[in-house]
Structures are given as C-alpha cells and as structure tokens.
Image (cartoon, rainbow, N blue to C red):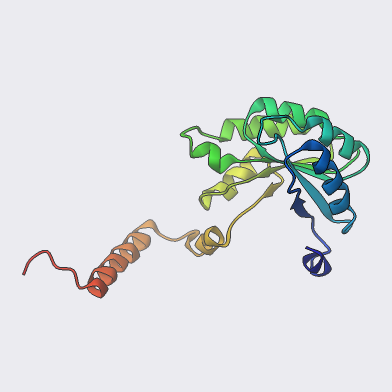
Length: 189
C-alpha cells in the first residue's frame, strides 16, 4: 500500500479495513489514515453479522478521517451513511450499481436519488461501483456521480465509441467465423 502511495499522490486512494468487528475496524482505520494525506479509509456499511457501521463512520469522519463507505445497496443505507459523515470532512459513499442491476433492478433511480441526498453534505461524493458496461460511465455521469470505478476490460471497449453499429455487426460475424475455423467445427460432412 505504501509503495502505491509513493507513486500516486495527486488523487484519492482508498484502502479497506480487514476487520469484521467495529472496534478493530476503528484501530485499523486510524492506522490506514496515517499512510498519506490522499488516503480514504474504506469501511463497509455493515459487518458480516449485519451490524451497521454508521457510528464508527460518524466517529472517524468527525475526527477528520476521510472515509469511503462501501457496499451500499439500499436507500436506508444511503440515508444512514450520509447522515453519519461529517460535513467538513471529505467522504465517499460507494453504491454498487452494477450488482444492483444484476438483481434485475434498474439502479438509475437509486443512484440519482442518492446523489441528491449526498448533496446535503458538500464534501460527500458518490461513487458508482461495480461497473458492468461502458454505458455505465455515461449513466454515472448523468446521475451526477462524481466517481466511477471502471475495470480495464470495460475501458478497452472505448475504441467502439462512435462506431457504426453495422461495422460492429460485421466485425462480430467475422470474429465468429474466425473462431469456428480455428476450432475446426463442421455441421455438414
């Protein structure tokens, strides 16, 4: 972690606590916060037993520790964590839009409403987590999210932005034909 921080100094970097009990989380969080000025401490919004970490978030944030509250999936969790973060201390709430979409629920209304709620705390940013498709970048921006985490596999798809759908179709068919030829498959003798 400290090696990463030696190279990344101009943007925020989040490191998550490992503990699952609130008391040890606090000790770990206070240690992590000493590593660099650009560090945010990632705190899950609940423990594995379902215990809210809102009081810990409140305490750390009030003490000036930048937190990134993660694994947020519900409006109640957003309300609880936005209320918990200190208005003066920078904070991030990470909402798992992609995993919400994986349940068959459109995350856009939730994300849009959460951004509005977070605006009550001027130093609280909303992070779109669990990106699944390139279009999620545009959706996150339209919802007002200040941050989005994007894996390299999604970033690689940027080359398709603005391409003619017919050309994408043609490339796809050519790719299928190449795969079939490489496998040596035949339906007819």
